Length: 92
Image 1 (cartoon, rainbow, N blue to C red):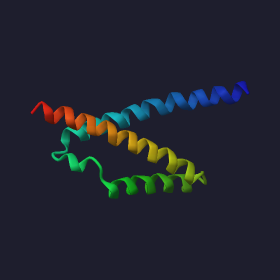
Image 2 (image 1 turned 180 degrees about the vertical axis):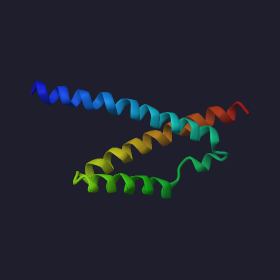
Image 3 (image 1 turned 90 degrees about the horizontal axis):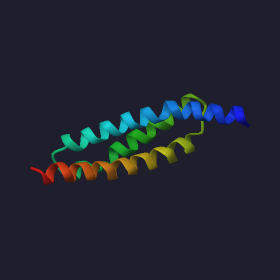
């Protein structure tokens, strides 16, 4: 079990910086978008989810697992971006 936990920790050390990098781009999007209605984009959500599922499929991975994670990640990101957008545009 120790070896398994060590490997999970190793993967997490690689994932966390990527997730934080992704979050920085979400923040940038909140600064760039001119209209609050642009923050939530159903077509973009489905595009991102389908791309993630395709990567999982190419790796013979569990597509449902990846979709669930991405839907959570996207919803959290949208909420964060709304907060950024509101702050940026309340200062204008």
